[in-house]
Length: 66
Image 1 (cartoon, helix red, strand yellow):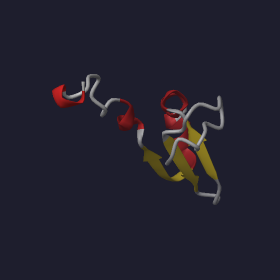
Image 2: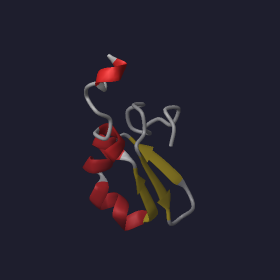
Image 3: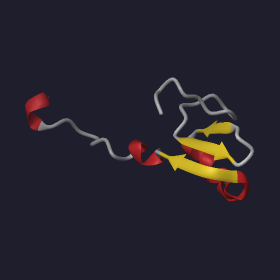
Image 4: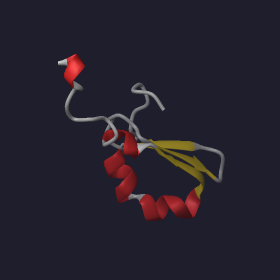
């Protein structure tokens, strides 16, 4: 997913893509993906969760980049 992919609920950057068994697709921010996780599992063919990207970036720059 890219920064251009937006949550279908609130418009924030999407980190969760749900491919529905019916053939459609839904996009969610990390918050709404977690909020609706159980219901989505019931109707999903596949769930792509990239919310780990929110915590994988170091909070400080390496010394040589300061």
